[in-house]
Image (cartoon, rainbow, N blue to C red; front, side, top):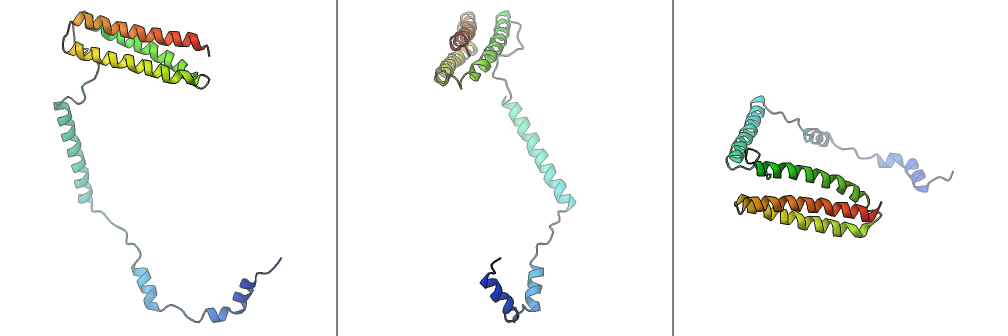
Length: 169
């Protein structure tokens, strides 16, 4: 092995490098500057926990007061058979469309050109559905709006069925 000239020089002149040693004062400063373990008093810890719990309770009460947790779906607490039919239809069609969309999304890799078109069409239908929901909340011709919402769901299912037939993957 080749010897390194720098290493040889350091070995031969080692005593000259060890002329100066740090004073005891330097070592004292180093040891005093080391981090001291921070201790938290138990009362401080419980105060912090109590503050977090209090904030969580207050936020929950405020959120419930202003109906933040109110579902975007139609209210199920109804005896109206037409609304119940809509809720059932919405659940059925949403489940079926989601199943078929899983199959379609598997084909996006082999048919990337369909992704944008399918997603755009579904978004348009969802926007129309959201407008119908607003109309329903405003009680604008309730029966007609419910029928239009169910028809929107049917059309969405029909569209994904057609896409699946066309792509054959």
